Amino acid sequence: MGMTLAEKILASASGRETVSPDEIVVASVDLAMSHENADLVRKSFQEIGAGRVWDPERIVIILDHRVPAESENTAATHKAIREFVEAQRIRHFYDVGRGGICHQVLAERGHVLPGMVVVGTDSHTTTHGAFGAFATGIGATEMAGVWTEGRLWFKVPSTFRIEVSGALAPWVSAKDLILYIIGQLGADGADYRAVEFEGRVIRNMTVASRMVLANLSMEMGAKVAFTPVDEELLEYLAGRTGTRIPLSPSFEPDPDASYEQVIRIDAGESIPEPVVACPHSVDRVRPVSELTDVLVNQAVLGSCTNGRLEDLELAARVISFQRVHPRTRLLVIPASQQIYLDAIRLGYLQRLVAAGAMVNPPGCGPCVGVHQGILAAGEVCISSTNRNFIGRMGSKDSRVYLASPAVVAASAVAGHIAHPGEIRNEVAA
Amino acid sequence: MSDSTLRLRGKVAAKLGDHIDTDLIYPGRFLNITDREKTPQHLFELAHPEIRGLLRAGDFLVAGKNFGCGSSREQATSAIKLAGCGAVIAVSFARIFFRNSINLGLPVVVSPAAAERLEPGDDLLVDLAAGRILNLATEESYPAAPLDPRAVELLEAGGLIPYLKKKYAA
Image (tube, rainbow over all chains, first blue to last red; front, side, top):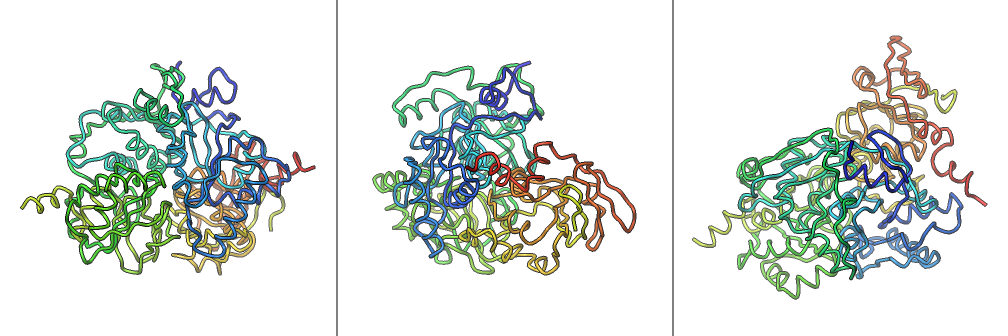
């Protein structure tokens, strides 16, 4: 019996020939990532009393949740982390102004390679399944254990395979596809499972778009989520690491792997238009055309889900030479310093700022409700981020709708939730 | 009230619904607090702050499916644990919350039958090793998913920190 990709990577990392779902294995960790909560990890690590971390080269720390510091508490956290990385000789530390959102920085600095076991003290660590890594989120104390021992126990997950055929309809993006899937499966529909995405639609996607699928799979409970390792991905990685790694069967599931469930989706048929996740759950998904009477106070373009260059480019194209609606504030948060620079160079930010957008520093920003762009009671936000829980972005009486960058940009111009085609038509007329 | 780490006695302090996420348990705006002892002050701050007043040492929380979904924030677990909660009993738990709980020494019990039938005020005996929950008033008994031996070992040690401390501290 063949193995799925999750099974293959866990078998290899635990020194076994094969593994099967529900077995417990102890796997060696290739990469351990933390952000501000590295300070919590540090405290637990120092309580354990092991002295030195297991391997400073395999630890990456990226400040992103509250940058620059919004409070004295955070300033003290940042300072403690700086002192710790220096004392432990952790080289891969991205301070304020040097990195951006942890998942984007890990990717664009070439830290993640296919076949790796990656753990991060952030739930959206599943993002790195887009690079063929077994990548998942853990808590701070568990990370202290990884810093101590360099290994971690896992229950081998069973795998859902999601095959996407057909072609994406106009204005339908990776974000719409994954929101549609979460809407079908539910917010716990893939709990504890590995997910493998496959099919022509997926292989035609940019690496940035594949990251959206892996990132949001967490919101249906997935432990890990993979998109295919192909030439396009290896080219992306070669551009970042300077080393071209060849395709390998160890980066692919076996043809006779066993799946708990195989889900087949015709993208064009199932998702004829962009979709939106309504408050207060990411699985309350409806077509955008049913929501155009929802007035919008704030539109957010950013996050580890959708703050990449292609997202800013698309938003700039949708907005074109129009202006943000007087009712609405548009916040743009490039996912990293590199994306920020590229978006300046390519004129996207010029266009967005001219339209009335405010650009916030690269980081998690309003997505976690801790750093600027907080919502008041009664306010409505449309956002390209990943969660719309009660009070996620501010008041418990505010409401967050999740959508693609194109829908966020169109809604910012319209002042209500809008189909991007509608905005463009208004321009033409 | 526990007569051992694995046999717990207490009352149900509150019953919650499905998909109670980590923002509801511990809002993001308080993540800049890294002193674990202070986290219970903000437990359920957004929607259920009254639970803080209801929860007595050793009491249980009962919830529906996917309890603790969302962020990996460990403060969600430490706030519940340090507020004195003896265990959370739920239909199911989100993955990271479940692991965080075991690692911080907070028992988490998967029992759809108990989660459905129990009500606030019920007096319970929870046997983690046997996988059984007994309602002392009605004498109803509910099966619970047995904990993995690794989880039992960690709970008995009081969590991952004391467990590793024994192994590594100089």
